[in-house]
Amino acid sequence: MNKDTHHISLALLQAYLDQELDQAEQQEVLSHLEQCPACQEELSHLEDIFIKLEHLPELELGKDLSTSVMAQLQEETKSSLGITWALVFEAIAAGTVIGLLIPALRAAAWLPQLVNTQTQLQAGVNIFLNQLASTWLVWWAELQLNIEQSAKSFFSRSYFPSGEFSPWILILAAAGIGLLANYILLRSNPIRSRNHKNGI
Amino acid sequence: MAFTGEQALLKKVQKGDLNAFGLIIQDYQSSVFNVCYRILGNRQEAEDLVQEAFLRAYQQIGKFDLSRPFGPWMRTLAANLCYNHLKRARLNRVPLEDERDTIKDDPEHGPEGTLEINQEHLALYQAIWKLPDIQRMALELRHFQGLSYQEMAEAMKLPLNTVRSHLYRGRQNLAELLEEDYE
Image (cartoon, rainbow over all chains, first blue to last red; front, side):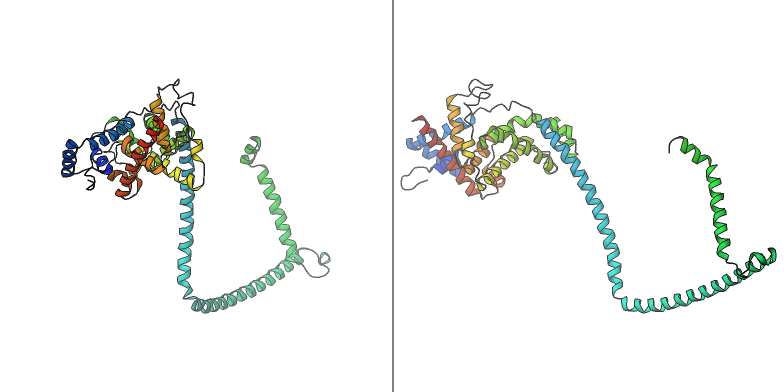
């Protein structure tokens, strides 16, 4: 309450109308209003505003907006599904990368040791490969010799004037026979012919 | 817990039933439109914001407490959306005042339209739209949505005294504007 004029402030009157005062304050305002025509008039003006606002008619929308909202929601749901799947794939990809990266990073501490191990391993592999190649060359030379001898004993010496017979000739001949056999087999394959008839 | 028809519908919406939400929109679109129209003062803008409000409501429906009425929650959400829209528009210097409707110029909703609006109501609408946005928002929440001071403060994310002050000034300004109109 305003002590200079002994009237109720507009703020207090509004709080009174809004029923936001505690019981003691409300009683105080009520008591004052009973004996103060000026404050009663002020209250009446305020009540007019309250009544006007309360009776303000609502306008008609005049159209149905639900169809448009639903269409937008369906569109959003679709794109959100797409985003969800994209996120799932990204999460899997990220998980895979991290899953590989972490052991790789852990192994980094062992790298110098690994390099040593690798060098030793590589040396071992080199020795093994060298031995394999030597064995294979020996076997190849023996094979060449055997074929040459067998062929020479089968054919007359005049067919091989140089005295050399390369196993490449036999290999190429075998490849030719293989191709011819495959061609004949594929030609008579029933699955191939059915698919061909169906235009596959 | 026994659900009312609307609560059962809202429960379905919370489970992702779009068709159920369509029915909710049909029930509330008119009241939500009026909230938006009172705050924005422009029919087209209000219709756009109604749609935006329902889209937001669908996104936030999971947070909605089914034991409470949906209407006030939905309308408060719409009011906040409109108020934030106005704030953004002011920052971007969009001349909103010039775009405000005059209702009586709108053949669809003027005195000859589907709704009877007398001169007094027209004057009140115009006066409301002349108020500062924050005072109009305070009036909307208090008088049209029936929120308490505390609820208004929560909805507007402002201290209670600030909200109360905007509400009081809004009423005083409204009274002055209406008086000017009579004179």
